[in-house]
Length: 183
Image (cartoon, rainbow, N blue to C red; front, side, top):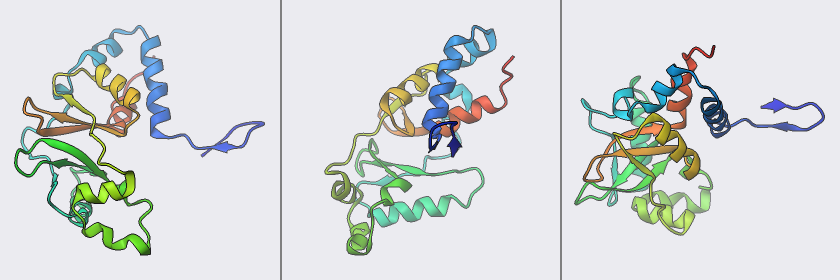
């Protein structure tokens, strides 16, 4: 929460911080920033080479997906706020299930979590929104531009078969700059 002089308080979101960082990097002519923006996501550790990406299939219940999110949060090397929804036959990414999809769930709708993930998401949004994706060879700068333009919290990194192999989030962008020397 930020209190602005002469104006009321406002929240600064992760999206706000990322937009600020993007504008700052475009205005900065340093070689270090230019090199960072050109690095592919695969070189920055956003592709899971050793581990399989945790997913939920389109024929599993939303409850299963939310339990999986909760289950994996107890591991220190995973920080899951969302899961890619994959086609149960092909493994291709078809959707996104996140903690925020619990918003609006109330006593009257509690049993909706027993619907399949697509059906559950349709009850809240009218459809299962198409996930935003990027390939592992996309640069850090390209991914920042896409996440801002798409107005999402994450991009799923996919292989040539559209199967999820990693995730790139607003938190990842912010983390990348926390140790950066802004001279």
